[in-house]
Length: 347
Image (cartoon, rainbow, N blue to C red; front, side):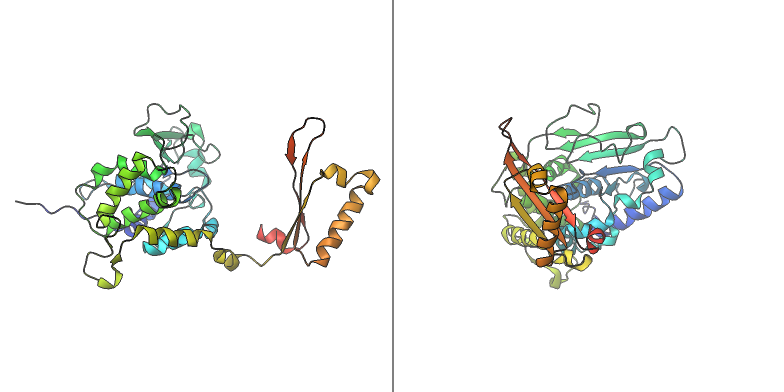
């Protein structure tokens, strides 16, 4: 008798379940099982952590308590600084409130690992291979796995998986590691969403497969596009028959839309006041500009203030760049001066 492959739940449902599990664990003061990307929290780290958690999630007959929670190691408010995330989340129909950010986890849970003195949180590192100790204290954290494409720091040798290979994108390594886990899922909406998530990071990191491409990336892209229909043009959408959400898969168009979103500043204007920044470049060090023979610091700041007021600046920056005569070394300096009271609010 032929058995139909299990259908994976959509990513959005998986994230809702993850948030529910996090809430229950916090209330019970239980240690957590997490996967996290690096502190830059770029698209590759985000996709790698979410895909790893999704591929590792238990099946229908397994305990849901074993779910690994994908964590973004940034405050929730910083999501608006990553417009490509906003675009991708809308493409995947994932409400941004369903993501888990580092400030969703109480500090005592991270530093104390729940109520037990011996308890430790379990963490899988993706897109980096050294624990972020400011967030995860080593005495309260066990690194269970590592998948990364940066230089191997030689740590956590007993972790499993422990995959550190050169690739254009870390999520390529996560994809290839988890290929066997996709096999029984069919090509339902959850699988297609996961494929599109991974492809987003790979295409951005490799410039649409034109830069820093390795065999790991090619293998991952071929596999992922087969989940969307194959050959770079396929179908992404709802398998339940809603034609309104189906559209041809085109990797170049997807890459261009992601790139446009990444370079957009529109989201910043929605959450911050408009500020005018003036930047002055000079070829002398600050010590020269503020020297006694030129009137000292008071004269320099007076001139800078006048310059800013004439141009209605909120923030004035001075960027000296020069060659040190004594050492012959090229140096840079930076002075940032708050003119507007709103500068402190914005930053």
